[in-house]
Amino acid sequence: MIYVSRKRFLTAHANNIDPDYFRSHRLRRKSDTYAFGVVLLEVLCERPALDRRVEEDKQRILAIWAQDCISKGEIDQLVAPSLRGQISIESLMTFLEVAKRCLHDEPNKRPTMAQVVVQLESALEQQESSNSSAPEITSSDSVVPCAGKTFHSISTEIKEMSSVDE
Image (cartoon, rainbow, N blue to C red):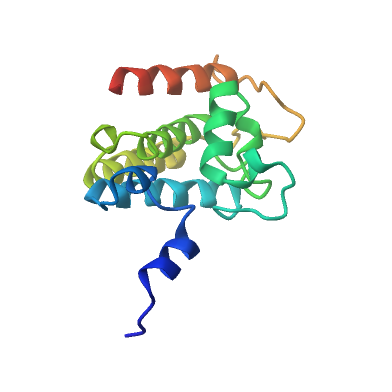
């Protein structure tokens, strides 16, 4: 086993660490849930947790940028180009709702990892059951209709689900 100092570890992984840690100086089980939420966003966006290539500070930290996009209804910006046209709207909505709940500021309002697994399995089932003609998401689309839903309405639904948890 390689020894890495606590300070060095925290510096290297600060963008995946539960913000509550910086207030309480305690890592909890729900701290892992927060970190997993960041990993979910890394997969969806194909961006690292800290993207030094981005000039605007607010957009460098993936968790902050993604939450901002969701709150503004700009979900199309979150989906990596390689996933556009391959992910169903329903699956995307479930996936984003899971990620957003994992990133909740208050640890006790985050799901357990067991709940995350169940929700991700649901997203997978939605993806598998969707027909192969899912609408393609392009970077120029700010609103894409699908089964009566738009990215903005999906964002609104995700915000409403989150507010019920609060």
